[in-house]
Image (tube, rainbow, N blue to C red; front, side, top):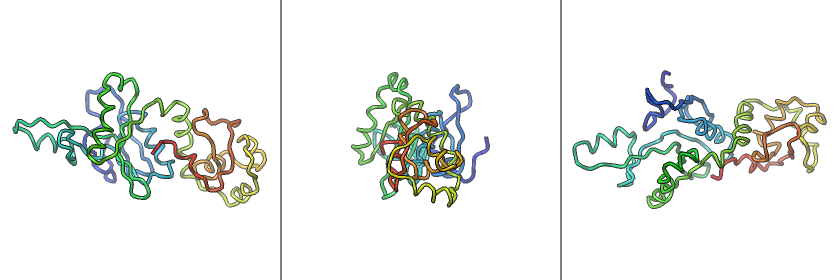
Length: 235
C-alpha cells in the first residue's frame, strides 16, 4: 500500500514482507492520515481513542527507545546505525502508540494479547522502566479489550461522523432521569437508529460499553453532559 503523505513517519514498520501476521490500515479521527497497526487489537484501541473524551491525539510507532540509556530516537534504524561498529549493543523498544490527552498529559501504550505476554513476560517490566525515565507507559491486553467492548467500539465508531438533528436533540431533552431500554427510546421519540447511535458517541445517551454487546434491550440514560461512559480505557 502506498504511504499516506498526511501520516507521520513511524519509528519502525509495523509489518514486513514475509511475516505471517496481518497488517491493518485505518484512518482514526485522532491520528494523521491512514495509519498501520500490527493487529486488530491495536486497531480497536485506536478506534476507542476516537471515542475517549480525554484523548486529543494519537500517534502509532512514535519513536524508538534504547532501554539501556533511556534515550529516544526518531526511528529504530537511526538507533541501530548510531552504534553500529562501536561495540555497544542498544536495547531498542518502540511503543505501539503515543497518546496525547487534553490538559497536556502524554503517555505511551503497548497493546498486547495476553497469550503473547505469557510467552514473553518481560513486557510487564516496561511500565517500571518508563517510570524510572520519568515517562508513563500503559499495557492494554485483550483481557481488558474484551470481545463485547471491541464489538461496541467498532460498531459505534462510524457514527462519529453523523450529525444529530435539532429535532432529535429537542425530543431527547424531554426524557427524564430514568434509565430505559434503547428500544424504548427509539419507539418513544420515533427516531432513527442512526440518531440513537450517534447520540451515544456524541455524549448524549450514556450506556455501559462493558455490559455486553449493544442491543435494543441494552440499558441507557440521558447523560446530561456526563461523558465519562465514553472513557473506554483507563487513561
